[in-house]
Length: 298
Image (cartoon, rainbow, N blue to C red; front, side, top):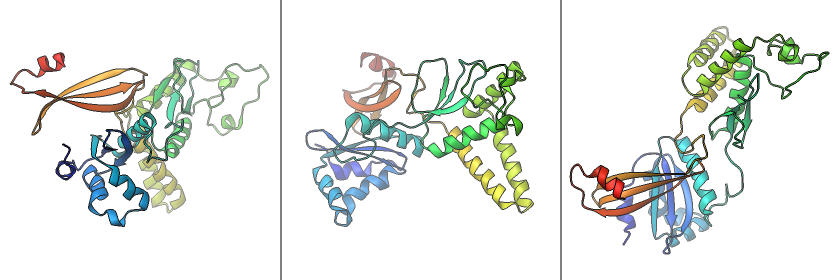
C-alpha cells in the first residue's frame, strides 16, 4: 500500500520530474521541479487554495513517482520526453510534435556551418543539445558565427561571377564564395567552436567578460548589457545535460539500490536516445559483494 504522507517525507530537495498516478497505476500528470520536496508537497498540503482542475487531479492521485536530475534544464527536457510518451490527461502542453532545438555543425560540408535544427538526421553532422532555451541557441549561433567568421549561406557551389554578401564586406565571413578562405584555418575555427559547445574552451566567455567590463568602464551600458546577455546564453548552452543522447540508441540501464525499503533493481529505459522512464523491482536481500551478480541476474 502506497502511503502518500510517508513518501512525501522521503522526497529529496533536488531538481527532477514527478509523475502522479491514479488507482489503476496510470500516469495522469507529469511535472518538473527545482525542488521535488517543495513542489510535490504543495499538491497535498493546501488543496483548498488550488484551482478546481488541480483539486480534481489531486483527488485521483493514488501514488506518485519521481526521477531526480542534475539541473533544472535536465528536468525540463525529461518532462517533455515523458509527456510525449505517456500523454497524461492533465498535461495540456508539449503533447504535439514540438521538440527542443539542437545546434548542428554540418561536418559533411567542405566548409561547415553552425545552425539550429529540431531534427536529428544521420548526415555526418555533429549535434549538440537538446537545449531548453531556444533564445540562447539563437544568440550562441550568431555569436559563434561572428567570433569565428564562419560561413552562413547554404550554398555549396558558387558561379564564377558571384558577388559576396554583406557579411563578407563587414568582415563577418572569410569569402568562401570567392575561394579566398583557407580551408585548414577554417577547419581549426570550426573545431574551436565545437570545443566551446562541448564546454572545453572557456576563452570565448573570458573574452566576452573582458569586453563587457571594458564597455561598462567606458559607460557604454548598451553594449555591456548586450555582452552580458551573450555571456548568460553561453553559460546556458555549455551546461551539460544527461537525459538525451546525441545518438538514437535504445538502452536499458540497471542500478542496484539498497535502502530502508530493501533492495531494488532500478531500470532506466532509454529509447531513441531519450530517457523515457524508470521502474523499480524488489529483489530481496543483498549480501556484501553480491551487487554485480545481482545486477547480472536481474
